[in-house]
Amino acid sequence: MRIVTRPDFDGVVCAVVLEESLTLTEPTLWVEPNDMQRGTVEIRPGDVIANLPFDSRCSLWFDHHATNRVELPFDGAFDVVPSAAGLVWKYWRESMEKDLSELISETDRIDSADLTRDEVETPESNPYVLLSMTIFGRKQADALYWDRLVGLLRTRSIDGVMADPEVKHRCEAVVAQNKKYRRHLRSCTIVKEGVSITDFRGYDEAPEGNRFLVYAMFPEAVVSVKIRYVDRARRRVVLSVGHSIFNVGCHVHAGHLLSNYNGGGHFGAAACTFESTMADKYIPRIIAVLQENQPHEH
Image 1 (cartoon, rainbow, N blue to C red):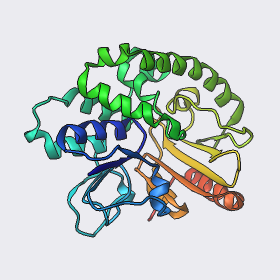
Image 2: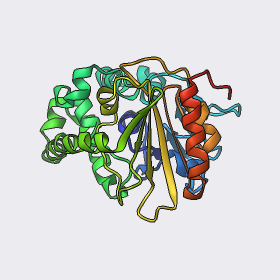
Image 3: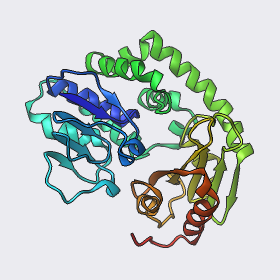
């Protein structure tokens, strides 16, 4: 039996609950949603998929993304709720001895972007928020760190997790990184008709940083668009959309919109990946729908 999940904070916490609940025989497999959508992940009977699109070969599936809903029968749980980890916790809660309710509550807030301006501007004010920012899905070499976090969150309090030398080092790096990221956002972002557009395609490696910071820096926008290349080869583009968490007023279902472009997600946050040759066609269409700001019919 093996966990297959996504390398973000919600995915890490899904793995925490699953490791507490199941007898696993193989290491966790960390993959991105687009890998599942493209069919490049080998899913086997016995696999437990969490926080990712459905695959009929798995034994259990847990997800909360509106665009991943399926009509096929499956074992597990699906619901449009703040986090996938919350679904996994609810499924096994009665049979578990350990109380993970605080961890799940914080995961719900972080994954649904239910944060204060102070937590966005200075994430070091909340250990869970800061910890979540140390998890980036782009580098498979970080899989050992994601595995380490799962073990730490299973065995330590949040203060104990934050005291771990590697976690502490990564948190310090995030604080420094966010200062640089602010400068990158300022130089690469424009706001047009209520949409902030951040284009990082001019970088060999797109800057990484606080994904909520754009909402604080460009408060006039109701929705953000971020564009970057998948890697140095520049063959594929990743475009993400996020409703502002401070200037609520975007009516477009981001997940339904981007499901038309090989992507998906939630009402307020979604992403898609497509060939670079389609960028000049797809990007203006997506931005135009967001600028029009009407409920999007799927």
